[in-house]
Image (cartoon, rainbow, N blue to C red; front, top):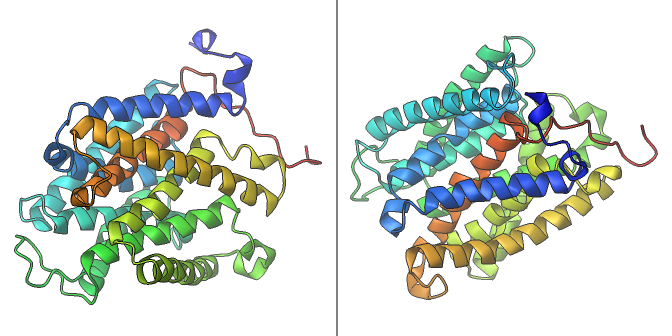
Length: 360
């Protein structure tokens, strides 16, 4: 099959390879979106199912490296096998969370819980590096344990921090200390700042070797990210009086959108030719520009598909929830599938990236 793969110069280098991949992911997301023209349809079963698939995808892509258990297969069959496994695990997660968390109904309680599973999975895998299981247990066992812990830790955090007390929703009723909308936005914000550190290769923490081992690195990241998230929340919500879901879109969602284009699609281009912190600064600027473009493009796309003017105050918060679902529930997973799972098939396999200037 290798003789049928695309090996043109643009297909083997960045940014051509990343632009092609992003175009494929956007077409997939738009194709799915077109089947749900109304707000209710898009933010109903489709939303919770898509989000339920993200935590398993984190394990498949970042713990199992987009390989296990299909590492002996070639693309596109490897990609299809991993995608099927992701859908199967996500559907199983949706079944039990809908039954036990949502009491067989799609409610804000269920939606918030599933969104938080994404944040927790990212922290367990990226922040703490699957500690203490990685390197001690098999790859498969590590991934499944991380996934199980994701749902258990999420349930604990849900009860401790979320406050749905008195809300007329079926299912469990967390009675924590914080407004549920604020809590879910703050949780996603921590994921954004976590990936800011990723795009900097953990700089400046990487300057201190004693910090670069788990769980010390995870704890240092958590403290740093918590401070940055609190400052961001104070500026945007308290000082600028910005509503919660507007904050969600304008900082963590659009920010993560840009960062995920730079990481799995552009494969750290263009900043990878330099060392840190220049690498991170360049890529973060590129991610910010891409996130800004995404904000206006997805806002216009949502208005087109739903027939609702996303620019009017009456559209809040559904307008921002639609945008968050499109980016977090559709485009994000598509990028992590097409990059790690399919390795940009039908393009030829990704060549090793060049190192910083002055290095081989």
